[in-house]
Length: 312
Image (cartoon, rainbow, N blue to C red; front, side, top):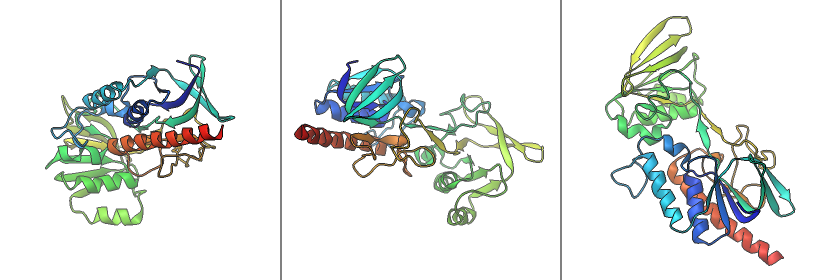
């Protein structure tokens, strides 16, 4: 890596790859820094059926590979590395500290660090991920037509996703560790009125079982008793955690969960710093809007660079 770039993109998920494509086509002096293989959470998605342009659907790996090839066609510069700290204020330049001990600077920075779905950490969860275990109802609901599925969680997202799943599944069982939901009352009322949604209270899932796909859940009730629930899919909807280690969260005005607010141009509260994708504070986290935000962020970075040159 060089010592300085016009633009640095942190993260190689859909937001980062889209930003990289736009940066490469604009011939900006750029680098996309990714600590592993490009793709982010999409690499953990077994099948993507709702990304425009692919009517037959494709695997998450294949979608990322096509995105990467598209950007590399315009000479996207990808470097492997892990940024441990971002210092946003050194005159007009931003300083990035790498795990290797290197330091690089940039005029503009796009944060595409993403977020990670919270997991239960129980037996069977990772082995059956993408084989009946999902973390996104909006993404995967159509795969469960006329099937019985479970939703784990009790917040707004979990209950809204449970309601959405009833458009496809024959039955949705919500499993919650407490005796009442955390979702807002209006969301609860809608779910309680839906005869396709049932609730199991005061219960945790202790393991997920199945040979090649989800077959049943082992349940542990708060009174110490156990039971099993036969399902063909389970949606674990207990929140997501932003990948924000090393970011200046106070200066970015991060919300109480650590997500970063942006304006309609993907700009943060720090001049010259944009954000895109799942790291952002928002309701909808889908591949398509992450990619859109990545493109918008680069356009904002271009305007910032043009104004910066005019001021010199």
